[in-house]
Amino acid sequence: MKNNEWNRREFIVKPILWAGAARVIGKVESLLGNPVNESTNGAILQRTLGKTGITLPVVSMGVMNADIPGLLRRAYELGIRHFDTAAGYQQGRNEEMVGNVFKEMGVRDKVVISTKLPSRNFPSNPAESKKRFIEGVEASLKRLQMDHVDILYHHAVDSVEEARAEGPLAALQSLKKEGKTRFIGISTHKTVDVLSEAIRLNVFDVALVMLNYTMAHDTGILTTIERAANSGIGIVAMKTQAGGTVKPDPKLPKELPPASQTALLKWTLNHEFVTTAIPGFSTYEHLEQDFAVARSLSYTNEEERFLADKSFTAETEFCQQCGECRKDCPKEVDIPVLMRSHMYAVQYRNMGLARTTLASAVPGLDACTTCESCPVICRNTVQIARKIAELGVLSRSEMVQ
Image 1 (tube, rainbow, N blue to C red):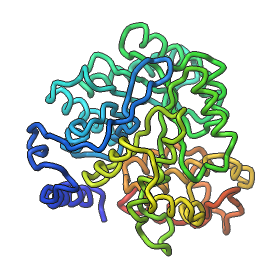
Image 2: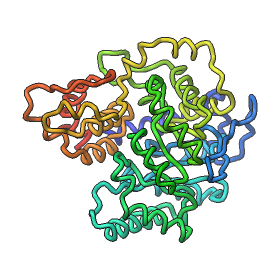
Image 3: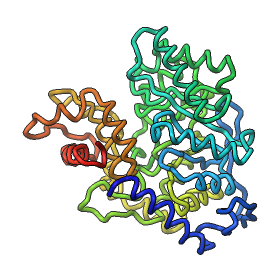
């Protein structure tokens, strides 16, 4: 199914159905922009974002997969105050939506907005790279209709060399000094190496890192994140639900039970060194479900049963982005990026992001076409060869092209 068709059905038909069910969507007036009187079962849990001093609810919104403005309005009504976007999401339309919503609502001073810019394809010359980075941020501010953001991330930094790259670092510090961002951050899928370097550099205020239940065994990741938090870096967690409700293997049952999502989100947030998480919900139902976690991190019996079932980690096939698999590949294909692309296409159903991510892999999927079989073995649970084959099919279809 084409992405636009799926979005139209998902975001127009479902909200109408949910509006009739008070237990799911709340009062209908909220869809019309009128005030709502939410019943609460306890105060919203809040934590301070490192040395920034910002206090946030433990559940925030990753806007990446959303393309309906009403979802942001409803998130604000419920109590979400941090909204995360990026220059590349939906080719800039995501930032435009965020900017339009909060301008119309007149609550810019009550929300914490973050955006992100990568530099992987920037010139190697530091001065040119700094110039390109600043130009990219200026374009983001224009789309957001804001004179500043609260957090500006150097995005998708997946090596120590990228983390310490002179051009982006100089740009970030210059933009902070000029007041175009209050704080600067780094986002990464290579937590141990990159976050360790961020601690050493002592420049970043915030770090956006992967953390979910499939990584529970990795003491290196957990220790590094906690060390960063203790150094004053505010920790924001992403990919907390390991790809969402859709299983990556078509032979498995298609959907995980609803309790899986709250259990996974609670597991991440029960690490107190995490300030907030940015689940990428794209429906009203999932918004209500995720934000319910913000009032209590205690597990229900159903959530405990889900976490006790150790088959979840293997079946989810969540790529830890460790990169060890590249040692097996004779062509050194950027397999971690291919695995992220597969997750975005199959589990997130975000074909635009899948396409953009796939294009950033060097070497990429094209290098796999001449191999008769894939010799790469995941050190964890990912069926790499199957996912590469599926990604090849997707890349030739209208879904990713």
